[in-house]
Length: 81
Image (cartoon, rainbow, N blue to C red; front, side, top):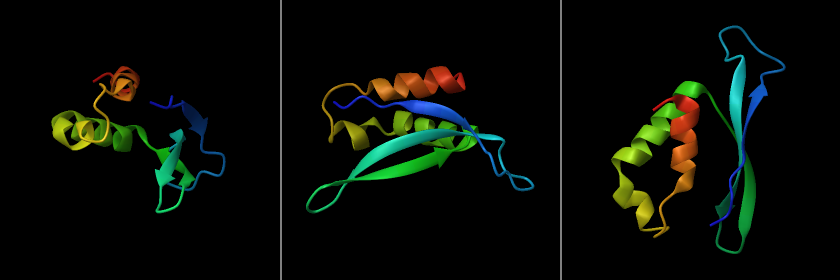
């Protein structure tokens, strides 16, 4: 499994009501011919929702990767879940 780096970054051009910081993740999204790098920004709440969804539905991601997903441990530690 490929290692994932998650960085907490400042929202440098913050608009009214926007988060002051985000979790930045660069992911490789598979396509028909290759993987395409995609930059993702998640707020604390969005990351918590995604982590909870994955934890509640292990059957959906275990089919793709038979090994336990250590990324979930990182999310839980970061978000205090």
